[in-house]
Length: 335
Length: 272
Image (cartoon, rainbow over the protein chains, first blue to last red):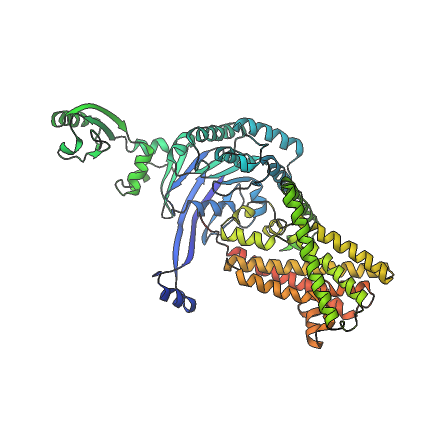
């Protein structure tokens, strides 16, 4: 479905050394530029029918990659095909087979019911009326969406559902969802996630999801790609990523004395309350038992729970440089 | 580039279809706020009439324009109303639209529509409130033609239509150039005013300008296509060399398209 090879994007941006008036005046006559590498020769492959999570920090290159794959931006080097089409050279043919939702940019007309924007969309994509009505009915039910009230009177969650419906009306083979749950409450998030899974299962739509909310990613995606500074740190199933750190455990402790008065030799207690703390252990199955015995001997523990690291914690540790990303490169499947 | 050229009938039909869609949406939006719609219709017509009144005051103040009787001048003003109403009706919101889209990084959504970006852009700027000006201009033109006793022949109507259409093509070329400039400058502000000031020259008969300026206005930068030449066509006093303005308009369109393509390839959208 998506094949990316050696893809790079380099932006030329103005170099500002200072925010002083003198520098601003000087910049009128002589302006310096620097090059920023948003994507550094990446390779990527996505299978048909997959729900794939694309995650990364702000400025990691996610949006640039999505925009290149949508045909909005031209890459500096490298190649990419989506459904066998080069997006930026044959954009109009390409976009007929994709749907795009930018979480912070609306495609609906604010003053009118969403259904009016849907009919505009039908005309734009020249969707056959009967097929359009069938799809609209199916999607409205799948999302349990309100489509006949002016968009301005909808809640953020309802509006987002309508945005996703709008992008699916021409039944694209591939759907890009850029932060679709941004600003939504828990119930709305859950509805959107369920609908994403339904769309994937019923229509076979391949979905690329970017989100800073890792619970979105872990609840709907089969596989993830972790992008940082224009390079992939990891590509593969979430389980493999978590499996590779299965020896790392998170202990949540409730103590009988204030945390600040307690000390556990060789380990850093992270207070989460006056009497509660967390501590991360790196241990394989054989060495956990003596560690716990030491813990119970040295600390006034009233309760303890042991958890495997969650996706958020693993990704956070990679960003902070506490986990070496090369650790997973051996485990990751060939793209 | 070929997808946008007037030689491609399916593309022209597509532009018409999208303009109609945009008009329908704007009309629905306008009717959602009925009182605001009625007030805007009246204000739009009032502003257009105000300029015609101003020009008529200038005309009487300087004891007429060379070669133009009062009746012919009123016909000129009626066609001017028709012209300003038409471009406002079809493309009145294009400049504001691209300014906002580029500034806030929303232009991306036009790139994911299955049409040429320019087709999407040019068909998103209709202004339903200008309908009153188009109606007033059409009515005024019909009345003045009758009062002047102008015999309308097929030939006159054909030449009028040719100049009017070529004028639209030239206006679209200027809009494309403006949009391409916006892509790399982002903030147009005063340049937008310059655009309006230049267009102001088309509001007077080209006979007011001296030799070389008049030729430049007809052939070099054919602003005369908008009102002056169509009126001359209706009055049956069009000079042959005026047809060069049609060629000039087509060349401007091709040049503007090339400029746009160049800027589009360098487009870097704002924001994430």
